[in-house]
Length: 201
Image (cartoon, rainbow, N blue to C red; front, side, top):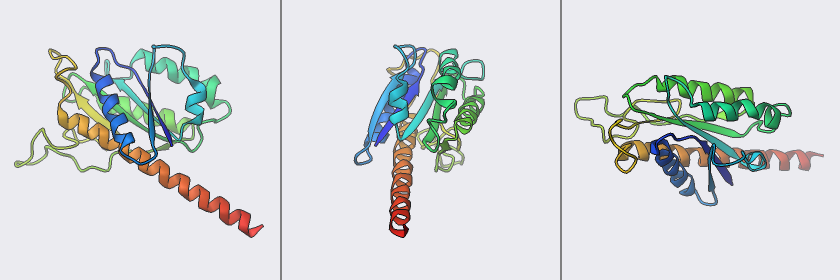
């Protein structure tokens, strides 16, 4: 199973989050994570077409996607959307910002809408919100309380050697593993359905 992680990172914080997502993917037996930083070279459209799942990542700038990832989204019209080459692939997303909120939800919503336009199957977090009670803390998974994707927060005066904090990275890893699990379940379901169709002919 191939899971591609297409992401942008301005200062290294979102790249660290992407690496955690990849670690989570690799926890699932037989799953391989392919990190694809946008702007590092041509977009490997053939790799994305071969992928069982694509996870998108972006810092939240001014309440939205980074310009580099948005450019990839626009370029995908000719490369993938015209022929719906990503139909029924699993999709998910993650984002990071300096503010606790930072309107990160808008970034994830933009990713989910993009995935829907490509006829992809969006997978969110299956975690209850952490850090939401008197006995909880910032060390909880999903401490920022997102369901649509993995959110992280990095203090603007700290580098990627310090931020985002461990709980945000563990949340990202959880998302990566969940995507691999769902992609495998769908693939096995399709295989069974195909076998049943062949057997009935």
